[in-house]
Image (cartoon, rainbow, N blue to C red; front, top):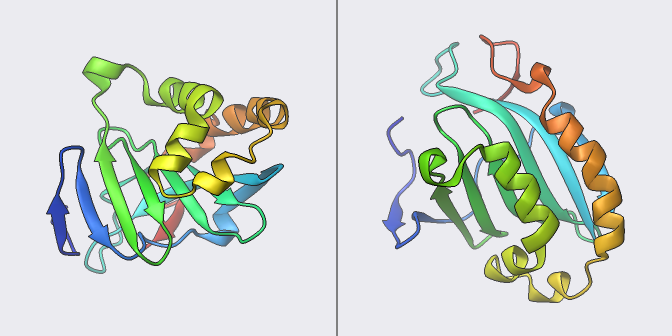
Length: 165
């Protein structure tokens, strides 16, 4: 897909001003975990009015529970795996994922949330939130989040997944 938004190339990926495509509320299940809330969404992305999605699959959102602001997003779209560091209203740092070097993306996502969520939030500019994480609560909720992320119904198949344009 051609970039619809102007970006700056960085060492890690692409930096965009503003926010990424919005969460599709009706396609997202929310899992509160203390100061963060996880959202699992089945996404399909369309370009230029097409009825056929160019990418899609499971997405994990990481929101600040108190404000609802999204700070991290992991898009497990087969062949288009990537993640975002988000500074709401300011920037969207898109980073591609190398499945050859780093393995299966859903395994990587769960491992990073389990072991590196605080560092990821700091990188996204949410250091205060990172300092308030309750790892025990996150670990408990992550079991259900992982199960949902691996649900085959979230995989893109035609136009039956939720759409974000």
